[in-house]
Amino acid sequence: MRKHFLFIILFIIVANTINAQTKGNKVGYIDMEYILQNVPNYTEAKAQLEQKAQKWKQEIEAKKIEINKLNDALKAERPLLTQELIEEREAEIQFLENEKLDYQQKRFGPNGDLIAQKSGLVKPIQDQVFTAVQDIAEAKKYDFIFDKSSHLTILFAAKRFDISDQVIRVLNRTEKKEHLTKKQQKEEDAKESKEDAIDENPVLAEREKALLDKKTAREKLIEDKKLAQEETKRKYEEKRKQLLADREAKKNSKTATTAKTDDTTSKTNETPVKDTLNSVEEKTTIEEVKPNLQEERKKALEEKRKKILAEREAAKKVLEEKRTKELEERAALKKANEEKLKENNNTNTN
Image 1: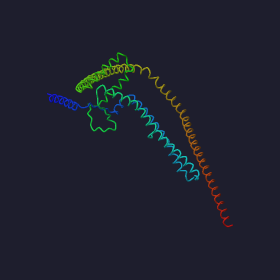
Image 2: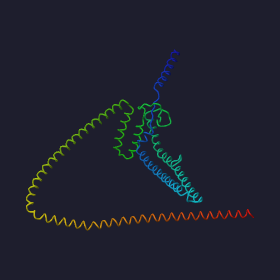
Image 3: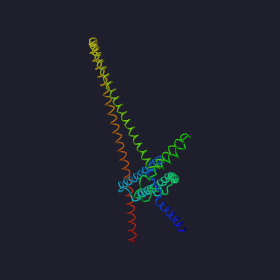
Image 4: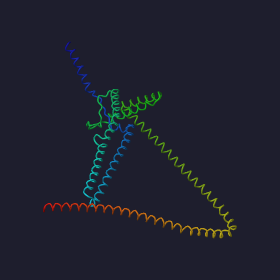
């Protein structure tokens, strides 16, 4: 009897362990990148951050263009400059280059403003996602929830284990509830319970999806029919208007021809005199205005040409003064070197 009782207890323990092993763990996963892309606050802040980054890039590009201009100017003027002036310009260019690199590191470096603001942008939303994931895991008895977009290697994951849409709904719910009345909150709770039931039951989810697809197809068919009816109605209205316009045009042309025949007999003597007077007036005005226009155009071209010549002369004068100054500096430097060499020779002979 005792052995029989021990056998029953052992059988119950083995059955429970087998049942626990066959039952398995409830596992789910999320896609953090997908969630972030569907959170409105994150997308707006990301767009603003991208605008800032674009502005920083433009500032760096402007600094590059300025440095390139200085380098090109130095290459062009190097034969005319002294060694001291060349060194000064090279030092200035190097200073601007270092300033550009420091600014680039400040904005886009590993510890720069872009990385810091990105982390500050993502961190609050990540905290909200982690809170939502914990709530879903506790409510629906999940044992493990992984992040598909993290460094964890997931070779395959079935779509039915993806709870990313559930997390997005939870985030949207918390944001909506802050601005809802009590009645709207009740309606939202009923909607939430329905969505949760669909998430729990895959068969119900498939049925709901099929019903939604049928509804959208039906609405599209009704919309297409409505558009076709409106198009036929529009064509009919255009055709009717065209017919009415043609009839009106024919009617007006008949009345115009009869009125024209009546008027031609009374105005035959007046028209030649008016035509000749009008032609004489137009001819005189054109002949008076034409020389004035030509004179003004000629005067404007002459002033423009004089202005261009004056600018060229001024630039030439500045360049000439610069060259004479540099030649004088070279001659003075050469004279000083010759005097120094002469003194050295005199010391050597003595």
